[in-house]
View 1 (cartoon, rainbow, N blue to C red):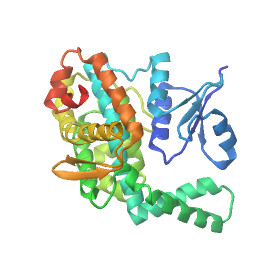
View 2 (cartoon, helix red, strand yellow):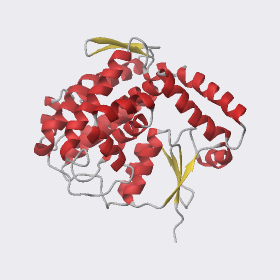
View 3 (tube, rainbow, N blue to C red):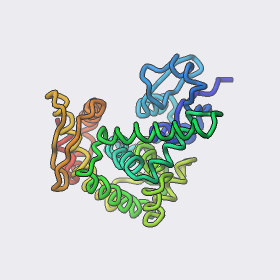
Length: 332
């Protein structure tokens, strides 16, 4: 019998739970190993970077980063597939996953560490994981340390008093658009989850567990909340839908969020990295967005553009990307 995969992660990491949800959908036997001081030595043995999720196979092969992990196992184990038959939808799914990983993470992180109730609730959960069997004083000290450290990192995702209105407006708009879209289907692309579901869900699952964004979701987005619960144990409930069936409610998300916010930010960020800038400013939704550039995302934009180049001849793809305002940013 093949040994189960070892998945090092955290319940508080959107990228970790994203991979766990995918493994559950694929029926891949795995041990969920919350990263703690007790397993730090084993983690360091396999990790090239101090980042979760980390997956270790029975042969000792290790993979990090949620998207490469999913792509690796999807290539090896085709069914149940998360890949639509329509190549245009394959790229749309990848684009939405990237939007989830890199833009939606901004408002998840912003709410988690900007608001006092969310900050202390999350810091305590992390402290309990770090402290293990230590006493209440140690947990309290660790909680304060975590809260202070993570609040100081808000600028890494671009969260500031200047960008706060845009981040929170994007969150509200996203859950409203998704709620309309998910009112008539179980998953973003129809009857089975695609790559897009796993990318967006990881961020929204974390938001749903935090007091402030979770309260907003429960108050205004019942279909999103049902999908959040469904994605804990996703199952095939039908086929992928064709673009004409999806477009009425999915195109607004591509237009208002991906085309007007995420991709302009992404291109400006990449330009700042290429130019060696310490910070950059870009106008998004008629507001100035200022932050330090994110090196990792400049690489993931390059990968997204590579995927577009490999798929750009797909019937209907350029029409979708052109109508949503995404095409020019992907052409490089």
